[in-house]
Length: 150
Length: 150
Length: 150
Length: 150
Image (cartoon, rainbow over all chains, first blue to last red; front, top):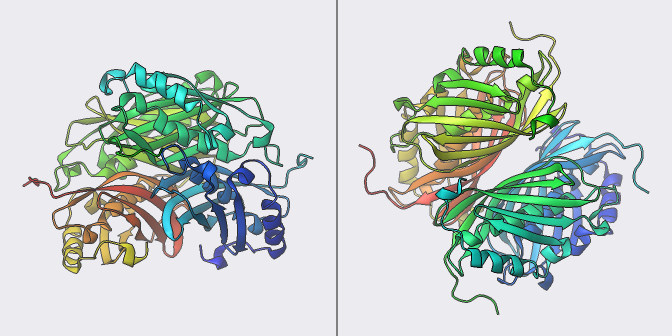
């Protein structure tokens, strides 16, 4: 989406979001997702393909690419949203383009469209420069929640 | 797909596959995926939603549902394939239907169609009896590989 | 979706919708879509594969199946909605399972989930008893519009 | 996909394909699809939104966008394929981004990846400069068929 069509990009939220993202526990930590940059309509992230992500067949588990893509679908929206608002994946589709056996994954998330209540996002992932997945999905945008979990 | 349209179901491969699946390391082990039953055209699996899968917002990370679905897309094909053949997710789409905050996920994978080279599969996941995701995807079926990873 | 989880089914809207649908001009008329039955959570439709829908390669144009699926995604929602409310496809995914060369298409639309604002629907199409496409999509439900087009 | 990763682009097939496409009968003719240009990894097409494509609700039938997208998924592959080879949509997903009430649709098809047997393609459609749909799908590529339909 051309940045002029997007809601304004908030640098402060972007910086805060990158820091916060890179200290998330749970699945993003297990996978080793690192958000490395955000700009209007785009986010970039990396993931080192550690041995634990390789199956007995010798390839990385495909679920790494779908979870990575799902994670980024919402991320790219935050700097264009009100502080405290909340983005959740509604649905997405991913094509796995080539097997991954190691190296690093580099993902670009791009906003295709965004309104006050919904966004459509694409995620392209490369493995050491070679395309390995392409995703497209819908994110639902919600107003600030009263009680975030403490 | 009505079972009579499917290639024959091999009980021995099914039993072996369930055992093997439940001792997989890596992402399936991290998520806690347990394959609990296979029959012609169907597979059932469970996943206990442990605290580590809950994000700071209080909901389970959506990537759990996409990785779980991706994992099962291929599983349901194996007992209908030649021994040593190999199934890989080509693409899939998932709708996240309701937030998950705990409990157990129960997934049903159903073969929609299957030829010698490709299958279409649906995955329905319930969280303690309430639908939480619905997926549909394409699996590519490959003849036995010469050298599986030792 | 089990019918007890759905909003109530309005028989009158269903009957009215079937009649209205089968006199629609434009793309549904060109394709020859006939809605033949509605019940809680389900709709059935048919389409005779006329010669004009067959391409020079001898197969039916794939766009017939995607347009047919898109059309039915919204249809199945109406009898579960308030009178005058409006359903619009947000997105869907379709797998084309087998080439079609003639005969009749028979589609079943099934509600997977439905809230006040959104529904997830699956569409299965058979060609003379043989599965030819499987779709899954999201429908946005809107409150009655002030000014329908006269 | 960067053009250097693609199989060679055959100008002659591209020119022939554009001419042939624009004299197709059936659904593409009904919708008024005009292929207007092909270059390595890309195809552009237009469709004038005639009154017959507008429903009683005042918006263009969504099936126009899905059929248009399906049509273009295969088109963009042909100039990169062997003469006489055949491309068929396996599956695709489309997000409808904004209602269309008239004007012209302009679509860009872009090859995301392509091997000898399969391609992944994205289709972006604008309505008088405003994005109205985004699709992503898989095309199966087949070697020349012995007997095309006479």
